[in-house]
View 1: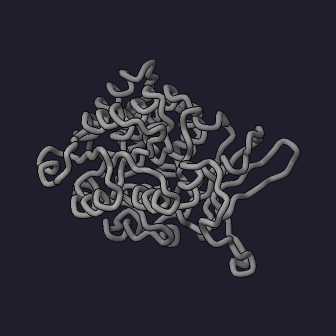
View 2: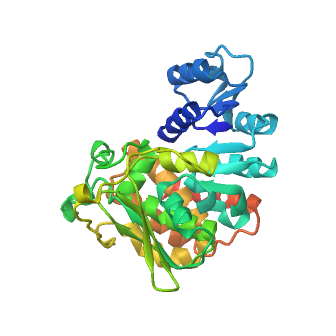
Length: 357
């Protein structure tokens, strides 16, 4: 397999599964964590390696090192592996998803932005979900048609904060996730609830179901629920660990324990809460976005710029969702008719957000 984002949390978990089940790792694609990448190269002896820049590539002792976006695409084209794990963060992951599909490969997808920005142009039959929520939906559906699907949210760093204090929260506070250990961007997205908005769009494109919603389940034990036409509702439960969905994405069938089972007596009780737009302002556009999913490219581009500004301390936490909503309203007539237009719209939204006040 090819692992895109090998030094991140999904990538390292993927390599643990690869080692356990003796899956050959043909290519490793990382960003700038050269020390960890060197360790991975020694452990897995990949044929191809790719990093963020040419300067970083010079720091590696490997015969086939590539760099940048073109390097990622070249690795995908050269490698013979049938499966690509896309755990890249952000819009950077879209072209690799498209390239892998064009090469006839299956994409084990953890890159939310691929479907959020360009779901209309990606055939889901080439995808296997890695996100715990979409894996949960897939696990429950088992080929059946749902009446309604629900994914769960942890609530992020500020789910129990006084609402009036959230707008001035610091970067360190936003990165203090109560349940999961994840990268900076997705942890901030969890705090604003933008990641759950993205997951609803992903589910809409991946499963072809428009009746999709989310609720907060603070313990992150229930990951997804499916209501069926006969009136039954089923829930997928597992401890919060990505290795289970990764194992299924890689092998489709798993015959041995990946995680210990959930002990219901230990859990005791579960708490489900609605997502309050006062606490999570981005939720105000949820229904309109699901009705116009092609505008996901706007939300994604604006969100990436907003997070960059927040991490650079150029805007306050409370301005993150405001900038995204402003961009969503500014580009209210967006309807890309091709992948080229997706990239053009992405660039236009980023330019506008950089100068917006």
